[in-house]
Length: 133
Length: 403
Image (tube, rainbow over all chains, first blue to last red; front, side, top):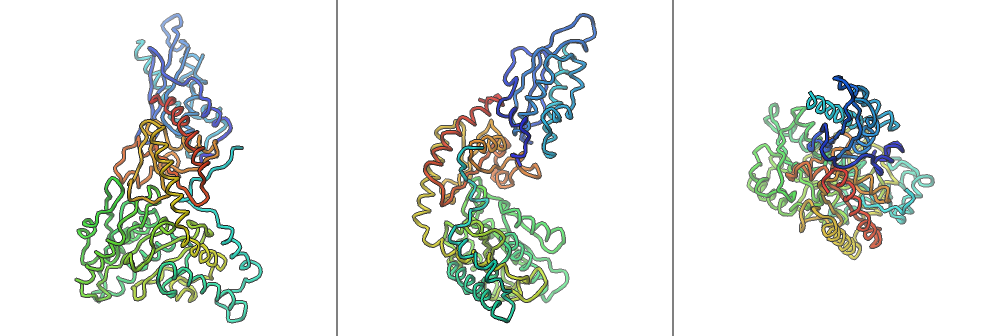
């Protein structure tokens, strides 16, 4: 079953992007929990844009730490790549379908990993928006 | 995946021994007769089936007519559990309203647990699932405490498929003999004792007299025989009903045309176990080397199950901070095939019920890896695993931030 991953999933599993801790993140989001076997934390660093609308702020850096299966690691890696350089407005719209799609698909039973990655990112953004109110 | 393949999943299945395969070959195209046919085509395959039955009986130290060929251990276990309980209902003079009681353990193979679950769902039996201690052992006293006047069957596996823990089958057999003695020895009030010996057969004494079992299940593909064939030992005089209807094959206990090549293969494979002592010693030595090597080279790794009462070929270790399916995938890219108790690698996204029953926490059961060795495992293969594994765990712990 685990061998049924796309080449892109395998690539991200063996060479995850943006992995590791972040000093002084502007937003932190976690998804999943150890009881289920997967736990993801995503940290973002944001560059504020002019004006009051935080939606135009830019996600400058993203980092993840994930305890989980190959799909969980690959989706974490992919969601950080997708979010990097995007505005808050754009990053908010990154969906589980985007993550899975960019990875060349996931086995059906692993789709929740994709959901988890998008969820962790959205929570990090939410955290940032709360803090910058 | 160009690396040399290293198979360390012998508890899942074993390759068919070349000599076993040779013995099976004539029974596909040349000797194809139906053993139930009266002509010479049937006679030659009937003789082959009976020769295999004798081989199995010799190994288990029982009578040939006490061996029933099945499609594997799942069927053997279903037949034992459902057959004994069904017969007990029919036998009670009190008739309607009798609900037989079955005792089993929480670490049995899913075919045993699910057979019991079906009996409960259909209100055909009440089942007690005994808990185990942290090594995975059933306590004899627990069995005695669980016994009721309606108890008709105790089903406890000989050795666990995931953690290799060996249950005290002989002691349980003695307990049941004693309990049956005090019941006055009437057949209709007997407790029968069944053991799933699938993982044990390669390594442990399977003399049914020593063990004191009434029923014992085996599966050929776990001991270098073919898949899709197994057997159930049913001690003479055991009250048991068949669970599928058809012709009169297997003394009417298991109707269906015989899987002749499979049965021949099973018989041949079982005779080969006998002279395995030196092979088993070597397997145990390699397992010990693997356990010691991992515990030394991978920080915070822990052996699951029992140190002493374990199968010589089973190594089950947890690597908290990493996740089992990820470890499995990384190892498979190094050519190493293992299995894991992690939820992420199972089709129902549930962690191993065995590791949960041991009382392990999620960090441990989701990070468990089972290495099971076999007669073709070499020193070099174990060395290779010990070379690649520490780096894999270190990398995954870095990703999880738990390095």
